[in-house]
Structure formats: C-alpha cells, structure tokens
Length: 413
Image 1 (cartoon, rainbow, N blue to C red):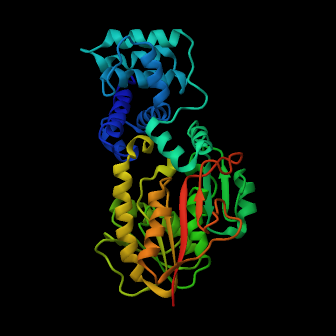
Image 2: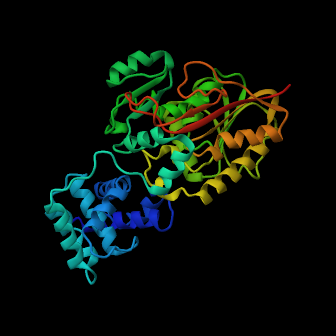
Image 3: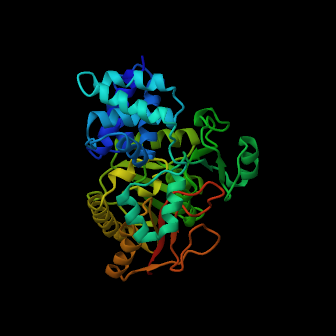
C-alpha cells in the first residue's frame, strides 16, 4: 500500500531533473495510474518537497555512502523520497522505507535500506533554511547580491501564503474580516498557506481569485478601464479578470487551449467578460490598434520558485536566452498594435535581468516611438529607473512576494 504514489513521485522527479519538464505539466502523466485524488496529491507533495530540499537531501545521502551515487541512479531517487518523507513530511520511518524498497527490487535494495537506516538512526535533521542549487545561487548572487540569495533560501523553506485579488476593491476590509486575512493593498487579501481554495467563502460567487500580490501589480498600473486592452499571453487569466473588473473591454490571447479553458471557467465564476482568442502571437494580429496592451510575457518563471521549486532545476542559461528571444519577438510585434498615446505594461515573473531590465532597454533602443513611463507611488519594488523589480527580500515579515519585473511604456503621439 502506498508504493504506487511513491513510484509516481519518482516519475515526477525524473521528469523535472532529467527531462526538464515543469512539475505541474508532468503531473497528469506521472500519476495516471493512481486511483484517486489523495494519492495524486501525495505524489505531488513528496516530489515538490524533495525539490525544495534537494541539495540538503543529497548532502545527507553522500555523507552515508562510500562512493557517490550518480545523480540519476534509482537508489538516489528512492533515498531522496524516503528521507524527505521522514525529515520534512512527518512520515514514520518504517512507512517511508517499506513503500520505497519495492521500487528498487532487483537493484540496490540492501544499499538503500542501509543508507536510510544510517541517516534516520543518527538523529540528523534537515537544516531549517534549505540550500539553493549551486548554479542558481551563483547566478542570483551575481545579479542581486548575497542578501537576496539568503532571502530566497528563507522563501523556499515553506509554501508561500495565499493571496486573493478582489473583484470589488471597495470591499477590501469586509473580505479581510470575513476570511480572517490581512490586506497589503486595496483589493487584496492575504491568508496563511494551507487553505482549500474552493471551500473559502466567496469562491462560488466569484468575489475573488487567487493571484500573488506581485502578479496583480501590472494590471493595477493600467487603472480604470479607458477603452480596449489586449491581454497577451493571458492564461490562466488573473490579469484578464482584473482588467475586466476595472471596466476595460478585454481581448485575452493565449496559444494554450487547456489554459484558456481555465480562463473561461474563471470568467464565468467571477461574472466577468472578455473576448478569448486562441492564437500564437508570432502569427496573430488584431484588426485594429488597442488603447492599452498588457504583455504578460512567457518567461523562465524563476520568480515563482517558492510556489514551483522545479524552476530552480529547469532554468538554465539556455532557457533564459530562449525565453528572452521569444519575449523580444512578442514585444516587436505588439509595439505596432498600440494606438499613439496608448500605454503598454510589460511584465515577467522572472528573476533574470535578461528577461526584464535588459529586455526593456533593448526595446527602447529599437523603438524611438516608445518612452518609459516612470512608475511612482507606494508600490513594492519601485526602482530609481521607474520600473518595478520585486525580490524575495521584500515584505519579509508579511510573507514575501514572488519575483517580478514590470515596466510601463507609452507610445508617443
């Protein structure tokens, strides 16, 4: 009993670490053989927590073996998920090892059992603050400094709080009280992690939707609706809902049919309206220019590492360069879709400057008909250049933020 969920967890880890797939994208395939939701949830929880703690788990395994196990060895994968259950998820040792040993039948079963027993009987614990992967730590320290790396390690130590964006910002105090949360901006409520979203008051009537506070800023910058707005790369739709609730006439474009299906469901649940278009932005063009454009650009997603720890292992320089080129192509095309005098907001949930600061600097050099509109006000992460760069160092006492870059541009009249 329980071995099938552990087998699925190893498949998930293999998909992320060996094939470079996003954890969420690999979930359906890896858990297809499982009988129900609880087992799928367990497999996901084991894999996600293993990724949060991977360098520390590997250090423990290496300390108990005479010869280092290869990174892709089945024994290492089995030990990772057995140890993380005991040391981080509270599973009794006998349950953790008994459900994992069948996964190495015909292989190094005795080795796995021996290493597991050595580590668990020693009384060793995982460090309170996890270690980041060496490559990620080196890249982020070079870009943002030691304090940011330390803050990122603290941020990944536990799942982040739950942020909600309200359809009616004037009801902020009311919903904060109803839900027992706190508000950091009008139209926002933050709750501790661990809530079942669909069981919260207000879900069925569409009073709010889940959206990290940093992710809500780009649409907030466009303000109240003043015409037609294009929401590019819109799915799963948090920013589309914001724009519609603010009174904009929204056209939401994305190439993923499955993600757009979620967007459509969210529109129905929240009683908001938008035109939804399935299209590749490298080929699609609007029939007429828009008053505003929100470019929620596809990116490495390294800024949401605390929600999706798999990005720490998938995001490499080649991925960053590939995403930066795609962003450049989208920006180049979208620039012609905006009316003179109109506003464009560019945003990425990335901690890589190539996808943010560097992208906008290059765009402004190529498009003299565009100018940066300095962002002012009490937004978190406003820089001296007038852009927004949120980092895990910010709002530490309140639960931190995802990593975002945001710039506001205007097409000259």
